[in-house]
Length: 447
Image (cartoon, rainbow, N blue to C red; front, side):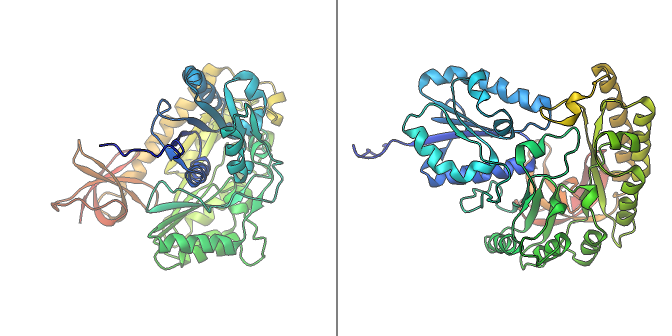
């Protein structure tokens, strides 16, 4: 029997949220979810079931932005049923009130710097205000703290330690949507990490658009020292960080990984191009040789450190020779993973005024050639693990294959079987012997 509601009891408020983009957006959504729940909202799993429909957006690439507007168009019919829509995140900050012109049924537009004002914006929404904006000055020193964070994983958690970017690469919209670099104090970061450890979290990932550009407002710790301090908190078994910028990648980061066993042996260091000429056009402010010096630090570490990167193909002015330099860089570095994309012009960026002279067909061919090359590198690299015993954290289960899905300290997926009658619980750590490999994953048996 359904419980009888009091006539004075407020009706339930429900929301649906979909997240596009990076881990920082995923963590931002955890903060938004926590705030909504604190305001009396209940999360539901579909747009149709929700009173409030939110899309937390990304504008790094054109397709990500288009996807958001396609999603809005797909569900605008729900507006006639009294549902309200909100656009959050980078597209919201980039487009501002123009979103209301493009999608008049949207009621709320808010950039990430304004999430601390969500409670008052929700009150305006509930009072029937048609168009509400939260588009704070992106230079604000205030950050949205994690008081109401609703973490989606009970074993691995994110902590944002720095927001924004001061680098102004020619292709990148982040400085215009996230604002200048603003770091949290090391004291607040460590306090949050300790609370997470006390709550049972064993893996922490420190986040920032340029995470290693961190500058402690208290002046107590460098980024490397903060990494080490988080890794030394009792109960924490793994510490990751992303994304690093090569210009701020210092030798003491490698030293910290060597010195503190809980710091994961994985570094993501976006290069974007292997051509110094293209790097100059991109305004990256380093050369191929300068980048390779940083790679040499990683390769000379006491323990093997997995390397991954980001690459853009088809940047305006990139010649066939420039592209071949990028392909040759893959062979020189031997990355364990590459996130590669075709260049797409973004609003407000310097590159938007450059002639995008490379045909999309040529961009696609270059992208495929790069991915084919990288696939062979990974096939070789992953095969080196066969016969090794590696500790993994259990993440999921593949019932169809009878496998447990785990992740290594090097951030590699390891699917394994076990002879135990009861499968290890999510969040457990298990020793696995690797028996075979693929270009993107390992296979093994629990020891």
